[in-house]
Amino acid sequence: FQSIFVIHALCPWCMVVWSMTIPIFWYTTLRNFREGVWTTPKILVRVMAFLQDYKNLILVLWYLAILSVIMAKFWYYWRTLL
Image (cartoon, rainbow, N blue to C red):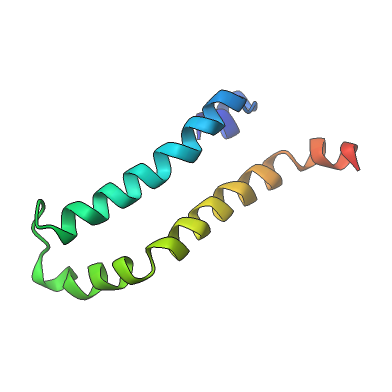
């Protein structure tokens, strides 16, 4: 959020860190729920099963959302490269 909306600049190093931090967070969180490290409330059991089944798709959609925000916010710059 800070890079895109406050600073208005993208740091290549930060983007590499994002690209690794997001799946580590996502897969670790799902693993913790699956293995019982964190208890899943009964109301969320079906939601967690859905998230487990579609974990890779959700990760791809997460990356696409970030890429879309970057493309939209910096379109004035990308347009000059065409």
